[in-house]
Image 1 (cartoon, rainbow, N blue to C red):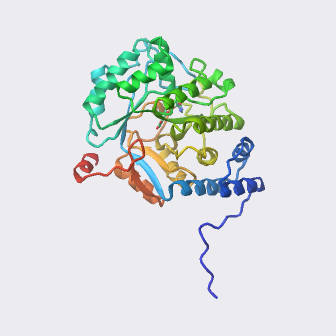
Image 2 (tube, protein in one colour):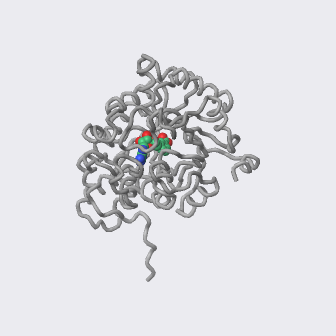
Length: 381
Ligand code: V47
């Protein structure tokens, strides 16, 4: 008698019995509780976590892994915040600091990839002399020169700082940025919402509730955003779950978050350089738990710059459905010791995704598929 091939949907053996009731919830599409989140983090059964997260990932996105052709632009590294977690920000008087002129920002934006890039990802330090009006003019100038490129610009932290200095409400500042040409906001600066941890790693920044309030207002005026969590420093498992649950609660209200990006702490050249780096095990577990807890956030990104292309590739089977983009020039992680390249070509991303057995789909920032003509493609290689 021949036996039928094992169905792909067959439930695997769960090594950690504590996960059994969670598996049943995941199979039934039931929301996981705070305590479930803690149990997931405490479990060493990474394959069962991956199995469950992959189930949710395939339910939402099938076989597709998204990537985009983007360029990061960091107009300045001058920052008044002096966060212990950061190796990027510098004092204005530091001879190694830099601030681009507006013309330099416009010029660098066009370098190399102008005809193919679909997104500029623009973030920088909290500069004590660059005003909200300066940034609005910079954004309007980019829009004028590159009208088809999506401008994903300014973390909630930068928005709150610019609003305060301009003596405007968060809403007024966000409306000005939107009118100037900002299309959406990136997810950075959220770190971890725990007050205890923030007091140590980023005590000069807005607190967690202000980050969430800024995101809420952005979503209310029609600006979508991403969201992040910085992990692998001083936070507990409960702090991580609390962070994810707060994002999930806001998403229930606004539906404004598009993608969640877990960010592994890189300690080199920071005031926390004594801390160890996260392991591949931590990174894959974080991707899986994010997918399982954030049932209402459409996309989970395995940011290859942060977790290496190899781990980001495996993450496509642990809950992630996005790998980020070509990036071109990355400073925040490389100042903190990242050893990854600063740039992957479109064909490198295609290859990585295909080897993971996924179907690569180039997207724009709103996750609409991008179709390339031959001539556009030649710009990319
Ligand atoms: O805001 C800073 C974090 C963020 C360190 O929205 C650090 O699509 C680790 O937000 N070690 C910037 N992390 C990156 C970011 C991001 C990246 C990719 C895509 C998107 C998106 C957003 O990196 C900062 C901060 O939270 N960070 N220093 C460090 N030493």
